[in-house]
Length: 138
Image (tube, rainbow, N blue to C red; front, side, top):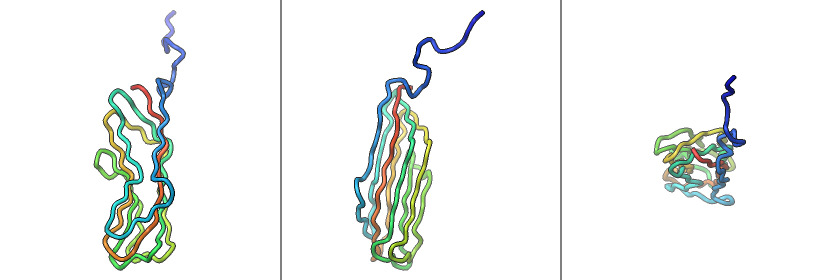
């Protein structure tokens, strides 16, 4: 009888030389009109994979957004927009949005960029965010 299975006690991929990754902007950070703020960026090294357990971002309006001025929290993977949340134009003071993602899997060479983009205008937002991931051998 043949039994097919792992030949070592390391049966789960995430047990292969794991490294914890935690990247964030720190506390709440102002993002005035016409600017882009990077909340977190992460590149998966060669020969590794990563599982993003949690990616969280929060933003609220500190100075009311002008007509036509919006503010986005967005996630890009390999320079392609993956997901985004938007504070609509002319959002009032203290308007709030949040973006939470769980369970993203990234392979070697993937670049994840988490940022806040506020359009030109008199309004401003405060934003915070970051990610928690586990990187392991492919």
